[in-house]
Amino acid sequence: MSNDDTARQVRRLAIPAFLTLIAEPLFLLADTAIIGHLGTTPLAGLAVASAILLTATGIFVFLAYGTTALVSRRLGSGSTSGALAAGIDGLWLSLILGACSGLVLRMAAVPLTAAFDASPAAAEQAVLYLQISAYGVPSMLAVLALTGVLRGLQDTKTPFVASVAAFGSNIVLNFVLVYGLELGIAGSAWGTVIAQTGMALGLGLIVLQRARALKAPLRPHPAGILHAAAGGIPLLVRTLALRGVLLLTTWIAATYGEVPLAAYQVSSTIWSFLVFALDALAIAAQALTGRALGAGDTEGTREMTALMTRWGRWLGVALGLLLAIAAPFLPVLFTTDPAVRSALTVALLVIALGQPIAAHAFVLDGVLIGAGDARWLAWAQVALLVAYIPVIGILAGAKVPIVAAGDGAALAALWVGFLAFMAMRAFLLDRRARTDAWLVTGMA
Image 1 (spheres, rainbow, N blue to C red):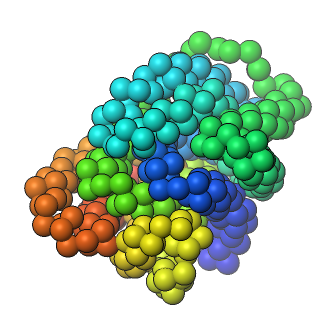
Image 2 (cartoon, rainbow, N blue to C red):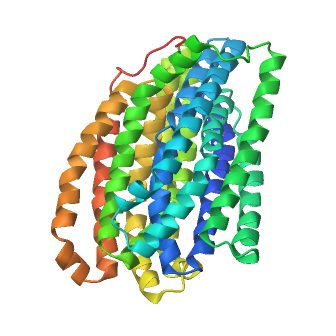
């Protein structure tokens, strides 16, 4: 495959994936802005609730990543019906995990929130948001699995259309429920539950129609579900370790006070937007790497990796520059509190500096996931979590002088620590990508 063909394939998958991935954080930003204008306390409550909810659902991101890698590899080997059968098994697994996780989240909302040591008022808001959001967890996990199936089939356009429809309706619902019916943070939670359920039903109908057309089995197969679960364990470990890093950072933000916590919620939401934007290349990397290795094309895999990492670094530079320019103006969109606005501006400038490093890490992570190098990724992420603990120790031990220096200094310290973690992650992934150990060909 020529470099031009490789570039065309990357663009064909990455552009719709980019639009899909930025759609979700854009609407999350809108949700944050809606709640932020209710006051600092609801915004701080959302920070805690979001950290818990994103952990409860984010640890199962292997439902998307693992399914993409497995489906694309089977597609590359020439078995489209086998690819869809593997995807259906992943869907059944997502529904089982979603039902169990939603029940646990609703029952444990109070103790989970208490662990963050937020103010009583903020904790009350967080519990309310979590208990309602728990009803939408099965749909959220089903969306992960269904999106993974479509990406594996080299289709990133359908998830984009579904995302725009779902999150567009989410904004409308949130305005009506939060402001029109005056439900506050509860209205935002219900809006998200309804939108996610609609998205799951829409994507599910499309995947089931494709499966029927190819006569792929639709009923649950215990062996296939267990295979999907076993294959996802290393990615689950990787994600748990990564979520551990994010939770530790949120915990430190909560101990710094309500203003730093509220500003951290907005800055982390903006960070998530940038992550999703950069992850578009990682999604393309997963789908194309799996298909290329399924077809035995190691040379093409190398070419795509080099191209996507180069594009990723330049995209990181561009996003960093745009964020630095917008940093003084963005805070007004999210809060009326002058203290939160000031701290947020400082945080955004720090985040802007780390975008090229983050981009390199995300693209290589996608390449290795697509290659099925999940075991190495799991151990590497655990090692990075251990390496991050001393950074958290420094941030916790220096709490008094950091907080005394001002809310902006507190946010800057948090993000400098987190970007140190990203630099370590980029280094390890780069070292792995330079080896041949992950270039395993054939059908999984």
